[in-house]
Amino acid sequence: MQVTSIDEANWIIEQSGKPAWQNSGRKVNIETGDVGVIVTCDMGREGKCIAETLDLFSQALEKSGQLKDTTGDDDEEEDDEDIEAQIKRELAGLKPNKDKKKPFEAVRLEMPCVIFVRLDKSIDPVKLVHRLCTEAQASPDLKKSRYVKRMTPVTEVRKTLSVDVEAFARQILKPVFHSGGPPKTYAIRPSVRGNNKFHRDSIIKTVADVVGKEHPVNLTNYDHMILVDVCQNIIGMSVVDGDYDRLKRFNLAEIYDPGPKAGSAGEVKTDAKAPAA
Image (cartoon, rainbow, N blue to C red; front, side, top):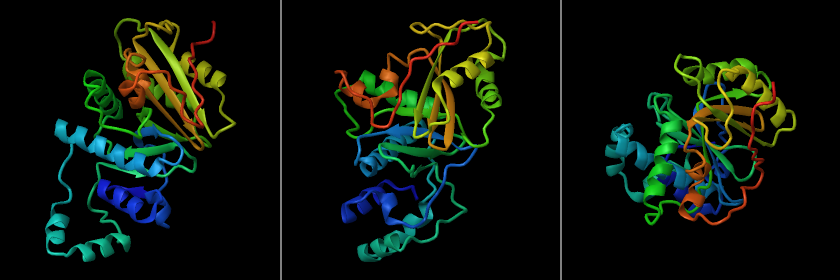
């Protein structure tokens, strides 16, 4: 199911005690070519994590001027409705207006502790997540989240059954590593959840081969971190800057509370380097 409204997510959780996606028969899948952010949370907090994530993204995009008002007509219509009519309209699950483009929507993953927020392709997930984490680190006393843990930007998604990892990596890495300029140091960090066909060693080797020997590996002082996330039947990839570890690997919970924390359930984290030549 997709959840595109913060109020919708909060209201449905409040009324039923269940995450928003469990109250609808409509299922929205993640498709090849999608752009977004993988977000982790504690088990049982997925619904609240959705509402919180949508709120965080909405604030960040509004602040940057990227959030366009696509609901003006609906707002005028709702002003003429009483509260009961509005609630009935939401519960009825009216067909979405395909002419209106939502800047983001939460999509259910068939596993606990993980959600995916699909973004409009005009929004850069790497910049969005980096901005949120940088602002959180600069003002940790202004805590804006309780349920969101790690946010992993996904520049693009592929389906694991049909993906050519080498070709996929070439596409994602080209702007950073193969568009001219001096050599850049890098590290690779794969994460695998709910998939036993993809293994860290093969991911590392394939991605490192694509990067090429002209760019040296540096695990502690890298210019760029390559993130590869496998979640069940999807694989996402992105390249982030050298402050990834300083920003607690984009884990908002750890930025706000820098004490030692255990990883989210279902997540396999690895610090990876390229194989020896």
